[in-house]
Amino acid sequence: MIALPRTNSTAGRVFEHRFLQYRRTFRSSIFSSFLSPALFLTAMGLGLGSYVSTSAVQSLGGVSYLAFLAPGLLAATAMQSASFEATFPIIGGLVWNRIFHAMYATPISPRDIALGNLAWIAARLTFISTVFTLIIILFGAAESPLVVLAIPAAVLTGMAFAAPIAAFSATQRTPDRFSNIFRFGITPLFLFSGTFFPLSSLPTFLQPLAWLTPLYHGVALTRGLSLGTIVDDPGFALVHLIALIGFIAVGIWALLRTMERRLVRG
Amino acid sequence: MSDTPAMPLIRARGLTKRFGTFTAVDSVDFDVERGESFGFLGPNGAGKTSTMRMIGAVSPITAGTLQVMGMDPATQGPLIRARLGVVPQQDTLDAELTVRENLVIYGRYFGMALAEIGRRADELLEFAQLSERAGDQVEPLSGGMKRRLTIARSLINEPELLLLDEPTTGLDPQARHLLWDRLYRLKQRGVTLVLTTHYMDEAEQLCDRLVVMDKARIVAEGSPRELIERYSTREVAELRFAPGVAEGLDGRLDGIAQRVEHLPDRVLLYADDGEAAASAVHQRGLKPETVLVRRSSLEDVFLRLTGRSLIE
Image (cartoon, chains in turn yellow, cyan):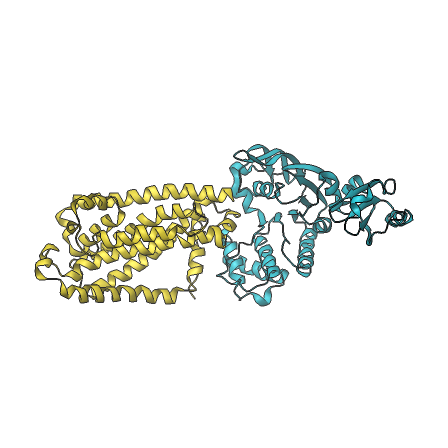
């Protein structure tokens, strides 16, 4: 058993609750955190990558397909985990077991519930991204020691999804619309935000659209760090970073409002 | 501002809650004294839960004034909630955790130290008769056990004031009696209880004083005994007639009782001597299929005050 971390902050106590829940499933969850990136990198990076021609490799910036793909998958995995954590557990606490209402009957405020849950998601993403990055290094797919900074970049990418999606989840009474988020949001982004192929392969009119999605900025950062190319254009990297922080800031602002409104309403 | 002994634990004046154009609570006044057991009795939708949520400092008041333990819920919500115990209408237990873990994490919400929570949790499991289930998951527990766990959980911070929103709704009679016994013990220990209910027997069992709510307003206030004396008679004779007979009774029961109430399924004769009223019915040649003479209850008070029964 892992001891319960303790904190004097009220939002921290919400985090403790998520941790206590997680203790039940952490063994299987740790296993899949290692297994899933290893499987993906083997199948897509090594398997599929062996069919990517040398001429194509030139357009990837002269690196192997595996080295190109791995940091993109890191960012995309953070997005997927974050989106899951920001949907079902939020509606669960509000509707299914109503735990958030139980918390609100104590000195915990809606703001604490919002921030405590986001902190938990950030902690989960840190763990998942660290494991993923270790696997990238083990596969020899990292071209630069800067790859360790891809961990916080991936966490920011995930949070850029988690905060606004959690804000939406806090307005829902059923999970019916969540499948739309995944079907029309997360899955297309996963496929078309530069994870599997450079954005320049897309029709020109679609390329500006990618700028509006957090995953594009996240992939640009994690890839720049893993390949080391980020040092060539630090200004661009800063723009990506600011974009991610912008999504997070707007998402937190929205979540504080929707969570408060929802819990006060009852 | 702190509460002085002379001050009621809860004081509401002109307390109002509106949701858009809908008025859930319409300018109600009441005081709850320290150590008493106070009830809100009324049908669903009367405004009981909205009142409780305002007292619990989770729902802002729309108009009027409200003080809870001398504090203002609008500005001192977390401080008030730190000294409250709340038993909500719907269970809010974490089914993924064990019985004991539910108590422990709840204690943490109040910022209590784990050692203190541990001691308190053991006492409360004993009190709620759940010690044997401490390590079990919550999900398979019976409705009564979940309710007792919710009450145990609400006591983790040793609250001065316990708010119970329909504590026994949906439980079988045995589970209800066990729960009432536990609540009675709390009352004896000096915990102030405020509860809502639409069960007369619950209000009569548990409340020193109660207000009857109907359509967002308080329509009467007093102890169960006082209310019955004021709005009803000592006894009631309930008559059931064969189908169609009751409709043709016009005037034939006049003068037998102080008041006659025609319900869809039965006729109620309000009289201080129910047996005498029932035999008078027979003397007039009427043949009810069944006759039941009972003492007046809060149900009769509610019927008198609103013209409707409590549970529709």
